[in-house]
Length: 271
Image 1: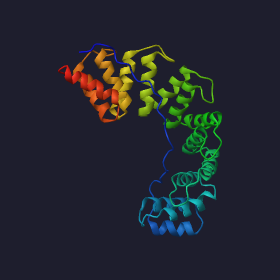
Image 2: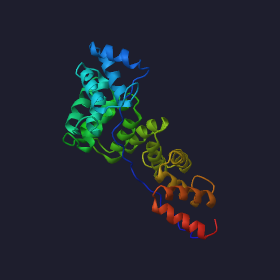
Image 3: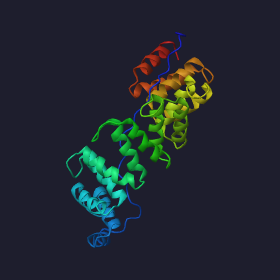
Image 4: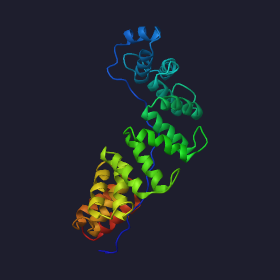
């Protein structure tokens, strides 16, 4: 078998807009409609959720937007957030990033973490607003400090890349670790990469393998490939070509050509 060490992939994985927020313990449709028509914002929001989900009524995006708007105009943060999501996706309303930014902003100013995160994404990507990495960092941080894992992850990426903030691998590791501890797969993968390369933390291949495994088990293809590399090379784990082949196969199935090549090589060698 070719004993040349395979190179581990180092990639910062991006993350997109969060999904709509749903209400808990929504009452039946008739009672919710009566309260909504009387002007109660919470009921208007819940009615929007019911139309959004088709819960107790036929699913209707336009009706969902109508009721979210009524609640949002009364200052209901989750309704403002869901209205922003509707504008992002063009569900029940014409797609409009600028309107999404407006409604995310209203909810974010009220401290709603999911809206703060989404607003950060909009500034990060320059969608509906002029791209501004410093503003993105500001909103990611607000959400991250409330424990929002996607925001913690994205804040880590910003520190790793030096976007909107001075480049700082140690800070990147800190925020990846917070998100990774909540089970965020992409943060687990990036944290594994930091340990593998000794960036922001002392190099520790055992820790790298552990974080790659967590991400790999959640289906992150790059982590599956890197885990295969570690078993193939005996890095941070006892060398085992059969296990390496299994992980390369998973990475290949998930679209990583290097995984396909490594799997084929081990297969030809009889493993």
